[in-house]
Image (cartoon, rainbow, N blue to C red; front, top):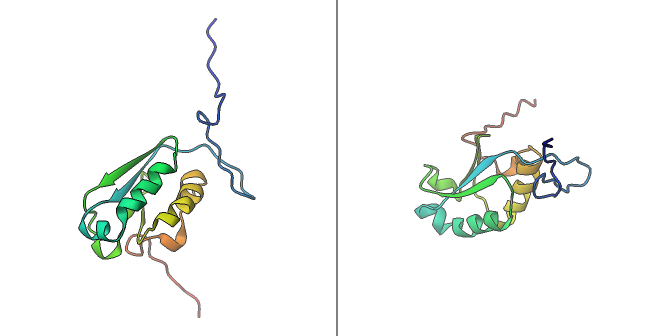
Length: 123
C-alpha cells in the first residue's frame, strides 16, 4: 500500500557537473571556516560567504573559532573527512565544492602541509 518515495529532483539527489567525471551524490559533511583574528584579517569572512553562496545540499557550512593554524589562514576544515585546507581564497571555494565535496577528491594545491605532508622520493 505504501510506496517508498524516490528522489525526483536534483535537490534531493544532487549530481555534480564536472567534465569527464561521473557525479556522485553529496555526502553529509561539515565545512568549518576559521573566523578568528589572523584568518579574519586574511579574508576568511569572504571565504565563508562564498561557501554559503555555493548552495551545497547536505553540507553544513559553519564559522569556527581559532583552529590553531594562525600563520596559514584562512583555514578550512572538512569533516568527517578530516581534510584541512590553508590560505583559502574565495575563488578557491568552487574547486573545493566541485572536486572535494562532490567528487571526493581533495584539492591538493590547497591541502595544509602540517596535516597532509607530501613526500618526494624522486632521485
